[in-house]
Image (cartoon, rainbow, N blue to C red; front, top):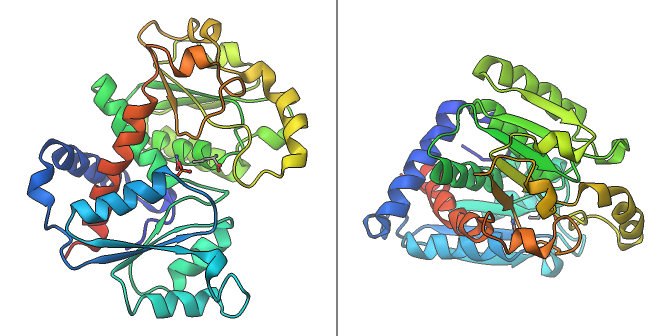
Length: 308
Ligand code: CP
Ligand code: NVA
């Protein structure tokens, strides 16, 4: 079984990860041999702090081992080998592959040819491990998920937004994306359509609005992400900054949400862009607990997919 996209996973499978992550976080010593002898290949085509370190730490703490593989120094990166052959060869050495890649198609190809579980560590399209860590954090902070209102503010055409739409709709959480009118910043239509359909079955209301103030009204969670994702070319930064400025999360915007609202960000963050320093470093921010929870939820993903 792979974790390529949360749209492939059922509500029950997602809830299983949340329950297992809760147990692992509560009693990590019980899992120190859970993946003894297992090796995870960690393929990176883009930069990473959290994903790289948390997966490697998770493997070590579960009694296994992680191998970091930078595609820049690989036959694949040099154009000497196909992705299919890379996947088939690596599957003979390791028990699982985690990959961070640009293209969704490449992630799917990896999943087609690997004969061991493949975990999506981010593409331009999705970031499923982040979204699982995020709902785990929301559950921990709020005690519940069903019926909770999440506001995502900023660049909606974004891997993290897409995976949050998928997971919130499955878990019956209301999610409003507040993004500029320019379609460049809208979540992809196919994701929104699917999230609305799934949300209807699970009692989640999914909406897209083009005004940050109405998006955050009554929200329990205010979430944003960088305006300059890893794949955005530097020459687009100035124009994006101009268009996204009305969607900066400020203290005044936070005041429109519930008084008990938490502020979330997957990180890396740019203070002065998508949020002010006052918000991300302020009392409502849970961003470092959120970052920590990547470790616990990834352990649960690894135990589920690689454990015997
Ligand atoms: N949130 C996240 O995935 O961070 P990295 O890019 O540092 O892995
Ligand atoms: N949207 C961001 C997420 C980083 C974890 C990016 O793709 O760069």
